[in-house]
Length: 150
Image (cartoon, rainbow, N blue to C red; front, side, top):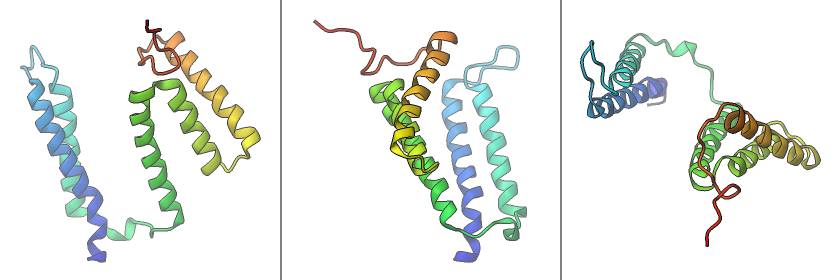
């Protein structure tokens, strides 16, 4: 089994590609002259699926590096991005960005608390100013900018 473990990534690409193609098809593909909202996601998901199939067939296991402690760090980074997305939807951008930056500064950059906290707060504020104020990206209000109730 361990000799075939390298096929897990391409197989995951195929599964995600097929699922995305089905979801995009549900949005409506339209026609070439009048494309529907699902046409572009459908094309990208087909490309992803084909790439996964090609990798399943011709991928060389010698191209892969062995699993190390660094691999765990990459997995932890991906899990923390997932947590950021969930927090972003639940409590808004500013607090979730600050928590994410704080986590990454402490865990990955190994910054001391005296640097990590102010950098995380300032970084989250800069991102907020850039995306919400300068670029007018409509983020959810969250717990900091929630409208007053009453």
